[in-house]
Length: 219
Image (cartoon, rainbow, N blue to C red; front, top):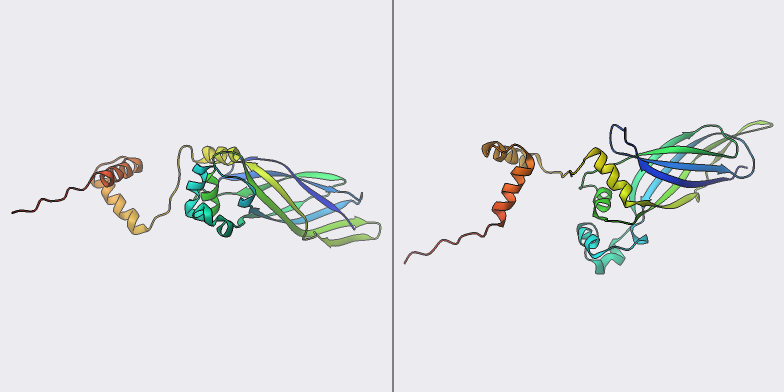
């Protein structure tokens, strides 16, 4: 029976991916000396938001996600981040592999909203492992399951997430709106001859900030 130990030894942005992707470097060790022929590994990643402290500014940005801080004892729960499937090749002793995790910057997605709210420190993550282990012994191949209790906790620096988004969306952010709203914005943008969406939204915000004049009543 093999005995596997999992460790995450690094994480960095994939600078050449087709879409925003984090690369986690995973180290897998087999501690009994048995040769591992292959592992069909399944990884589940969760965010554990209760495992860090938040500044007043961060708490304010998390209001939409968790509500007021006095309710956080009930509202702050683990969030599903990603799933990844990795085929681990044959190895003796230990092996290091890269785990690619695609990411989104859509602020309607809770994970992106959470990441964006943080200024510094680490993002508390939990990796849960499952899958099938193929080993090769004197009598041939054998098949085992990765035990369900195998997991790793880690802190991903907030600056890694910020760097990833700066690579793919430098100085930008994304929001989701209804098509009818987009059509109305497009008509307004074209009618005002604005060259980009920033000018369009700035004009609308400026108009909304101006005090409304109350018409005087005629005698």
